[in-house]
Length: 312
Image 1 (cartoon, rainbow, N blue to C red):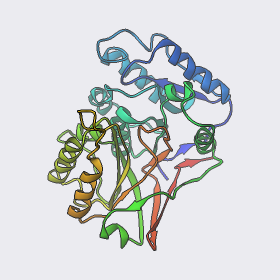
Image 2 (cartoon, rainbow, N blue to C red):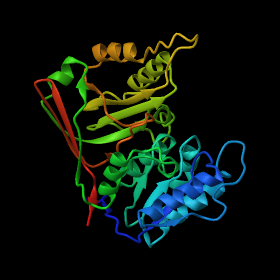
Image 3 (cartoon, one colour):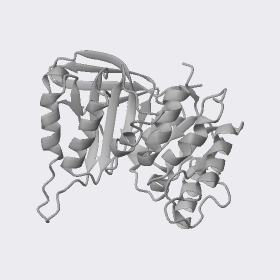
């Protein structure tokens, strides 16, 4: 596969970037310690974090660090410290960069969805929607799920299986077998790509979405904009990850997102599934983007198998 990345070995260099929000100094050191624990060599630029009213640094500086990570010849992986907001401001810079000859592996979630979308669609890279370094450095990932990420990166696992998906509409129940590729990420961030040169393209793909802190009406509005923008038209299916923290105000604890998904299950002609263990909830399993995958439905049971995209 042209966009495949190379499996890690001990002592490999990991380029650490902060394209969005800042991390605190102890979180940066936690990320460093985490990579050292895996016997990897963290390359964290001096001055990666500087006080700023929104981001980890000025746009030009965040871009200079990202560009250096993309162009470095002695590393295979670019791992993001945290999400927040800021990555989409770097896309015009990325668009001026010549496509690298050798693909690298980009890792991150949330705001990093902007970068995933760009490098998969413009450069054909395979990427990994997986926990951010500051989360791993704060020991917020269980030993079981930390091992899963380790085994993916070091080539011990060639395929990731998800067995907890549930079909939400008739098209999903009748799907049988879908051979495709996965794209997507954070719903709000993907919405910000609409109308730009780097708009999310889900044609002939399975679209995975997740979000945090978005109430039901906001999720519904985003889905409606996706429909009106034609994103769902040629999509092979929609897969819901975790939608976390969308309770209505007033202290009732009501969350209307499931009602929203029920409505869309009836409205959409494409298969709709829920239950992918990825997003902002405590369990954040790795989801490879732009690699071969197969989703099978048998007597209501769903199995999604995704190739990691790595190579020796």
